[in-house]
Amino acid sequence: MRSSVWFASILLGCTLISLSAAAQERASALSPTAHWASTVSEQYLIYPDITYGTQNNYALKLDVWQRKDAKTPAPTLIYYHGGGWIFGDRTGATLLFLPYLEMGWNVINVEYRMASSSLAPAAVEDCRCALRWAIRNAKQYNIDTDRIVLTGHSAGGHLSLITGMLPEGTGLDNNCYGDEKLKVAAIINWYGISDVADLLQGPNLKNYALMWMGSQTDAVAIAKRVSPLTYVRAGLPSILSIHGDADAVVPYEQSVRLHKALTAAGVPNELVTIKGGGHGQFKEADLEDAYEKVHIFLRAHGLLQ
Image (cartoon, rainbow, N blue to C red):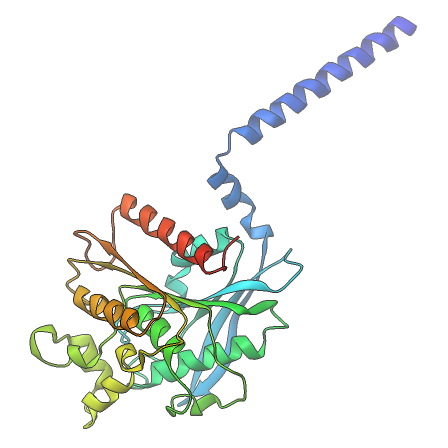
């Protein structure tokens, strides 16, 4: 009887060791990326379709991805989608801010009015309202207001720049007036427009810019009012621009001009040039290099551990 019990216990022990080894083998079979992808759904609370304002009978929506386990206010990315101010929506942008989820940041994904709903400067007004909403609701969503970073691609790059660079008193905040100080820690501009007026005529004329202005008689004045280059001055947040030098949609020279103007004003900034790069759709190696630069930039400005 004792020998039977002894044999059974040995057999059970061997089985447990075998199962443990198998579990370890399965765990080790996952790459770090695969491990993160398989567990990220348990790391975040997602609050979709939050209305942050209403303009012209248009409900302005955003989504919040909030880190579950953060014990203190977390760095937060606000993402503005691209589309030349005339198309696109926030639902198509998720893959573009995955790198920040992997960093463990909160993310706010913003939608704003297209030209078909409201002409310029409506999109800028909306994006400023989204920033105000984030600051106003920081406690509820565990947002560190000292570590808010704005980013976006193409028109989203422009909107991240103008949202973070606008001073008070432009009138572009009147749709969502408040007493919160609209400040951000940094801006990451992916091939965004910095001079809208440059796209309304001459060799750089672009149909999407004309469509955003529509038939407004003061289109050039409005374009200058919503151009980041108009607001270059000392004291701006740190800015990183990433742009392909063969971009046929947003002239690369605009990022060069922005970089020179920011440098002359003493604003910490960098321009990452993607050699031969077009309007996004960069080679994998170029994207990896660009995100390495993003990490270095964020770390240098105390925004990434």
